[in-house]
Image 1 (spheres, helix red, strand yellow):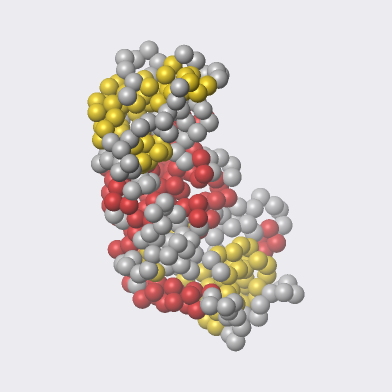
Image 2 (cartoon, rainbow, N blue to C red; image 1 turned 90 degrees about the horizontal axis):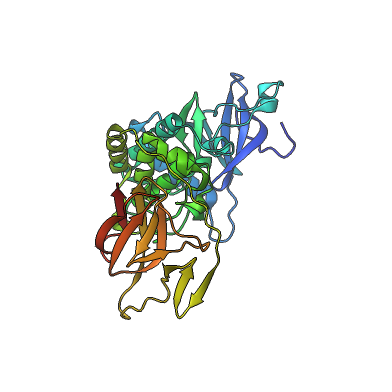
Length: 386
């Protein structure tokens, strides 16, 4: 045991292997059986109004109350205990990803989705299987009236090769207060931490699996566009991901069960694409002329310069085309992304006036795909295919 390891009944804490919520996770050996387990330890000392141990106990009590809903894609909590200084609970140990040749205890590295993503995007088969397992575990919580509030790759562990959603420290009832607690990068823009927030976070996790990109790059595909566009399963997953990550609360799936059903329909209905993407590199400068951007001789849609009535709000809209990589034109003008490049599908364009616009997708030598007039006040996603 390390010198600074807490004293926990029946367990020898070998070394810290991670953090979860407000506590620290230890690799531990049961003194009676010699078996290795993971033990999460939370200090009972509070700072001001914060009571992390109490919060964890409440969350785990909620989980224990729905114990009959034990699910293979939720990490199993084997024991909950306390000392004068700590609250602790014991769980199964995640798989070991260490390739070292020493003892298990010395070289153990827990297998998480976060760790796996450090090597890049998952294969199509892995993406589909991991997405299914994540959503099935999350759906079990939602069906019991609970929300997780911290869905992210670090909280997806692999036990015997199966993905299990872990870290229930922020678990709460679906109709409880909607404070912005969780991991900022995976929170929806509205800040309401309910089942739809879990769906939003799950969509971002699937995006990371598909692309290998960090969550901040959503929804851009960049170097993964060709691979995603050429694979029916990845294309189907991307459609579900974009629907889950709608910025509007009511535009997302109601819960993980609905999202899982949409995933199954999308995968079952996926057809092999018969096209391939042709990437075009454009390196020209843009200048502002009389309130309208000009890009290499093309007129470019300037969101800020568009004159709209004062009562008209500005919204975020998703644009998806098949094949991917199509340029987006609004009202006859090319739209630029945040880096000053022509926006190409799939993409989210921010700050668009919530009124009617004529939408066109343009791709290579194909004829323009005219989507007609779309009212962004009521429709936040435009999907087209040649």
